[in-house]
Amino acid sequence: MGILDFTIRRVAPAATATGLVTWASITTFNDDWDDYFPPSSNSSSNSSSSSNSSEPEKIVILGSGWAALSALRKCASPDKSIVVVSPRPHFLYTPLLASSSVGTITLRSACEPLRALVERAAETASSATFVRA
Image 1 (tube, rainbow, N blue to C red):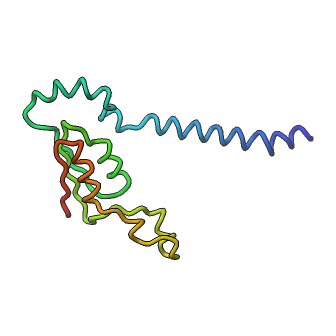
Image 2 (cartoon, rainbow, N blue to C red; image 1 turned 90 degrees about the vertical axis):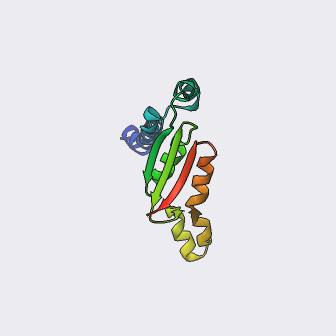
């Protein structure tokens, strides 16, 4: 009974944590965006062939949430023109909202203007604009 007790209390949680870390690393590594937007090392060879075309690829991102911000960062490359359409002109760090309600941080710390994020993406993309819907 002592071995079984040790296994349940010590080995099982460690195996579960290892499985969770493995799942998280595989999920993060197999990001679906990387299939459409290859890493920058591969895009340098593709950019010379795509620079012959007169117009950059146009991408429209709807919303200003976590997925939109991730897509904006992944899409920003010299051969793409990005338009972000959102009803709100800011990105809200939702995990920090509870801290702002009790006064640990200010609301300005949990809110980032979307125009600043789009301008940062415009530095690497051919163009990036924000349209308020």
